[in-house]
Image 1 (cartoon, each protein chain N blue to C red):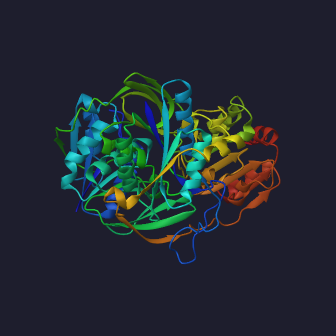
Image 2 (image 1 turned 135 degrees about the vertical axis):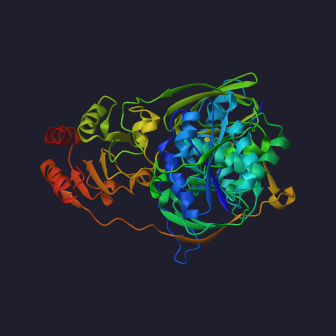
Image 3 (image 1 turned 90 degrees about the horizontal axis):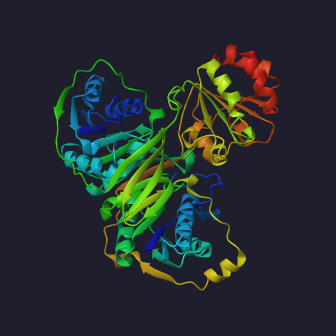
Length: 309
Length: 249
C-alpha cells in the first residue's frame, strides 16, 4: 500500500493545503510519496522533501506543467498511478480540477472531500452542504481522493528527509493554454488558514462598507470573508466566498456580520470553534449556530466593536 | 454548433436535508425538488451563446428516474430546443454519469458541453472534469466568463486565489460557476411551449455501458449539532465574552 499526494504550489512554495492532504495519507498508512509537477520548481521539491513522514518526492520539472493545467497534469498522474493504491490531493480548486480527470482516465471513482479515514478503503464525506455525512467504501484498485483540509491538521513542514527523484512523462496535450491570473492582494491574511475571520453579507450594502470589516481584521490579525450574496452583489471578489461551493473554513473565531445564514453559507463555516453573529433580524438562521449573537444594526455595532478592540 | 447542457434534479437548495432514521440515505420522499442551481447557470449560458449566434441548437440532457422529466421540461421552458432523458431508477456515480454523457455527446456530434460545476446534493464536483477526460477534450471548470472565437474559447475561472484566464481548444467541456450569469425566470407561455418540445427517452441499459457503482454507502448520518449559544445585549458584553469566556481575542 502506498499513497501519492499531489503537491499544490506556485513553483516557489508548497501550498499549506497540501500539508493537510499528507496527514490524510498518514491516516491511511503505507508509504507516502509526493508529486511536484511544475516548471523551475526545484525549490518546491526541496521543501516537499522536508515534510514529515514523506518517503520520496517525484519531481516533474517541465514547461508543460508550469501552470498546473488539468489536461497535462492528469496525464502524468495516470502514468505514475500504477505504483500506488491511493492518490490524494487537497480539495482546493486546483485539486478538484485535476483529480476527477485523472480518476476518469484510470476508470476509478473519486471520493470527494473526505473528512475521516476509517480504513484503507472506507472514508467519511459530507453531502448535502454538510447536513449529512456519508460513510463510503471503495471497491476500486486505486482510490482517488480529495481531502477537506479543515478535518486533518497540517503535517509538520520540517523534519523529513525524503529523496528527490526526477520523473519524466506526461503529455503536452496542447488542449489548453494559461493566459493570465488576477490574484487577490497578497498582503491580506489568508482566509483558509486564518485563526480569526470576519465575514460580511448582503447586509453590508456595498463594497465600501467592507472597509469597516477590514479595519477590525487589521486589529485582530483576521482575514475577511463574505457570503455568496455579498459576492453575487459585487461587493467583494469571488475568492472571499465562504460556503458550500466556496471556501470551507474552521477558524477559532468566525464573526458573521449582516449574514442571514443560508444553508450553503453555514456549510462553509459551521465547524468554526466560536461563532459570533451580528444581525438586525433576530429570526435570522445564523443565530441558530452562533455561540454569541448580537441583534443590532451592524452600522452601529461594527464601529463600536472596532472602537472597543 | 450544437451544445449539450447537462442538468441534474436535486433537493431544493432552500430545503434542509433530513437523514433517514435507518441511516440509509437522505429522505427525499415528498421533498421539493428543483434543477441544480449551477446547471441553470450552464443552461443560461447556452441560451446567451445562441442569442449571440454562436450556438444553433441546445440539447438538454439528464440521467435519472421518471420525475427527471420535470427538470428537463424546466430546461425546455428556459429555452433549450430539445431534451434527452436517459432513464434509470439507479443513482449513478459521477464516473458512470460521465460515461453516459460521453456517449450522448458523441452521438449528437456536439461541439460544446456545458454543466454546472457541482451538484448541491452529493457535492462531488467531478462530472464535468471526468466527461472532459473521457472525451479527450479540453476542460474549463468553474467558468465565470466565456468567450468563444472559432476553434478557441477564452475562459475566466474562479479559483481559490482569485481569477484565472485560460484558452481552451474547441470542442470543450465547461462547468459553470455562479457568477457566470443570472439565469432567466421562466414565463408561463414558455412552460406551455415546453410541453410541445421533443423529449427523447433512452433506457440506460440500452447504452451497453459499465455504469456499476464503485462506492458502497455504508451509512448516512447527521452531523453533531452545535450547542445553543446566547444572545448578548451589547458590543461591550460581546467583547467581554470573547476575551474572558471564549478567550479567542
